[in-house]
Length: 261
Image (cartoon, rainbow, N blue to C red):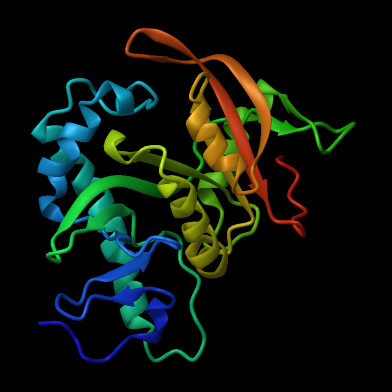
């Protein structure tokens, strides 16, 4: 049964009055929300990630994407969401909003007229574990260069930094069902997550996003949200036997003094 008392630590999340599930409404879309993952999301995720219009731009998902793959993914992301929600519940009597290390909502859903919900995509924030070799030039801090000697150290330090550390480099991972492409939904989802959760609740100061070369739509999503293209990494990864070039985008808080060290 849903609780009748709103936990102020959930702010700015809303809560479904019937289920007690928190959610974030995507700005500009009354029928699109972002919720925590659910154990029964698998059957809706599978067709999206078996669609070449989706998986061709993604590095991780296997092809074909099987029920066991969806189960494995949910076993990874659901506990992360649950852990943050438990932290927020434990801090419900705290006068100040706590800083957390994850976003508890990541599943993009369309709310139908009958109240049912359709999973149409995902937007995740994770600590960057790649591209540690991409650093600011010592000659020009507005220019990024590749220094492979610093890759391992940078990635290790990023993993070990404490929650709330402004020097943490975060990154987005996202996809949207093709039927919902070209509607501005992902642009609005990125903006909503950034403004409503990443900045105020995670103290994010540096956010990156990587797109494979040719994925013009995704690049535009981040440019429209104040990211800038910082570097192109030719042949950065081999995905399903094909060499992929990566375009890397970054958003940095204006007051950030991080050096990309």
